[in-house]
Image (tube, rainbow, N blue to C red; front, side):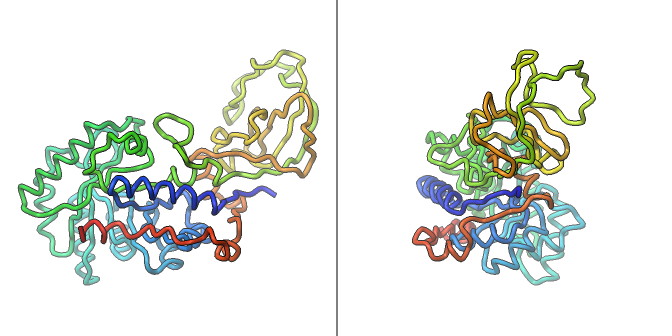
Length: 384
């Protein structure tokens, strides 16, 4: 059976480590759950660990969280479109925004629901994703802060999320200055600068990130431990908290180089180059019943470093095992570490089982399941 295995002890370890980093920096943080795609058992596990601030970019996922965890702080992380305004106000305590027309609509909906909706104004700083241009910040803020049912709690930015632009200290310094400018201009506090992400953690760890950056939205580092700037894994984090277990459907000794001319007729790219092998060279090849329909195969890395992915079709992936079979047989499991795109495809797909281990009931009974107390981000910052 093919399945994604979500190890709760591994997640707990990563959350605990990152929580320590946040506390040392004096920052609050929100756990980004979008890669879980609303998976019920994983969300319940986060609740069990004491997580009470979660962010997602899909309203359906926020609905799923709300059913499971009624007492949590919700962040909507995708800029709202006009057709989703009602659900955003209903489901999210905070949303990230960059269009004044949308903010006006959020205000109207909040008035109808007799509630205050909090927003973080996103500023474009070089990643060319969402965000207003800095030159229009004062007029934008002036329009937003006049609205009766909108509370601007801060400014923010997304860096390293689209164009691959590496976050730098100058960008974060600019954000801090923009907040000072707005606070002086309008004599109103803006308690949050939400510009931290998994991509920013290396700057946090080397001590160069300005203290003014006081809210983080962290997902990938929790689930995969990824160092997005330097490659590899961030210090003290686990990169195997979530793995793919794929069942061997065939294992045989075969040639490693095609016997005939090859052309680019394959619908999917093959990661392994045939030039790594000599014509006539043979070895053991295993076929697992997971393919490009299920995940981004290029984002899989065999846990055993001696194995190599030779290629994949829509339904199967071929793994070069080596000169011998490594005692593998049909029905055995080959495990893979995942990058973000591979995990996202697996969690959003319907063909692969997802399993939390140990079970929630077992985890509740373990001494290691004490609450980590990832508290709501807004309350603690605004109270300060």
